[in-house]
Amino acid sequence: MKKFDVAIAGGGIIGGAIALELARAGLRVGVFDRQQPGQEASWASAGILSPAPENPGMIAIVPLGKASLSLYPEFIARVEEISGKSAGFRPKGTLEALFSQDAKAELSTIIALHHGLGLKAEPLRAEDARELEPALSAEVEAAVLRPDEASVDNRALTGAVLEAAERSGAEFFPGNGAREIWRAGKRCAGLVVQNENVEAKWTIIAAGCFSAAIKDAAPYAPVRPVKGQMAALRAEDLMIERVLWSDKIYLVPRNDGRIIAGATVERVGFDKRTTAGGIQKILSAAIELAPGLANARVEETWAGLRPDSPDHLPILGPTDVEGLLMATGHFRSGILLTPITARLVREWITEQRVSLDWDRFSPLRFQTSAANAAQHAPA
Ligand SMILES: Cc1cc2nc3c(=O)[nH]c(=O)nc-3n(C[C@H](O)[C@H](O)[C@H](O)COP(=O)(O)OP(=O)(O)OC[C@H]3O[C@@H](n4cnc5c(N)ncnc54)[C@H](O)[C@@H]3O)c2cc1C
Image (cartoon, rainbow, N blue to C red):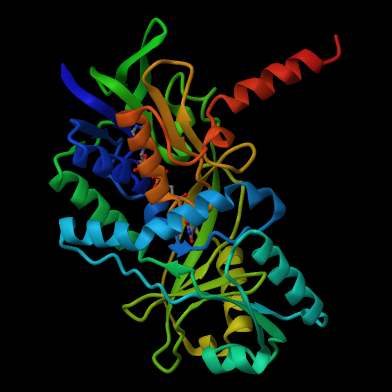
């Protein structure tokens, strides 16, 4: 029987980064993936590192996002050094373009909201925004510059994290998915993978949007897939320096000259097909934001599945089963939240305390809400 200090179900960027942290802390770590690691959401992502909330529901993760963003430079340096691979980190800021007639009012609301949350944000007049990013449409009325934000090449970073974890001593078992959590009374004894039991003192479920399919994980991690379609464009005569946003689209420049455009948000189960309607939506919004992209070559289209939770917040931390932790449900921010997730899990396992309050993200919150709903249901 295989025996580890820590068994991790899922070798995406989250499972990989946790494996890296724990292996570097001297623990014996086994990562079990039902396929080749790093081929799901972490591969499909856009790689934007932005703690700014997209809607009021996301304000709860701002402290986590800010902490993670501040860990990024050190995280990238470590991963690149150990793996010998570049992660395509671009700490160049992001720029949100406003098109509305009352952009001025919108601008001051956004700036006030950001400052209230301790996020750096600068208002820009349309002409100043176009000076920074000449590819922007002439229809842009104003913009918000968030100078601290960044992006990574998430495919490169995920590959580098997995390589760094392996070089640090973590063992990977591709094609060996977890079927169930191995319970021994009130304790978790490890994982049941394909045809064997894997013994571990600590077990971590990090299988992204597939986590709920692992038997006994669903009450703690009721995650669902949310599809996002994407396109990679290349335009020889058009330069984009920063991540650009409108309310319909984002454009993410890569070091290799590609511009990633995305993404749709679709609740259609585990379907990863790209569709004519989805890609059309992305391309027309991309051209609206940067009209020069009309001549761009479409190099690739793809879709991936974000791991969403019922309240759209991550699911992080210990459960009521001794030795069992969840690290999933990162929805639209999993690349951003990777360094802080790995750090908090490592702290919990090695020191039984965490440096940032993660109770809001407890895997036990769904059981409480299910119990409350049952209590208040009409007889
Ligand atoms: C289109 C799109 C755009 C995105 N853009 C951004 C962005 O700009 N910024 C950002 O921060 N985030 C973004 N995200 C979100 C981010 O990509 C995810 O939150 C993050 O990648 C989740 O990582 P993960 O390791 O939890 O999951 P995944 O990368 O999905 O990895 C899960 C792993 O678990 C494995 N697995 C499945 N079932 C089992 C099993 N039973 N046993 C063992 N292993 C199993 C899978 O094979 C996979 O390797 C985006 C996501 C998508 C899809």
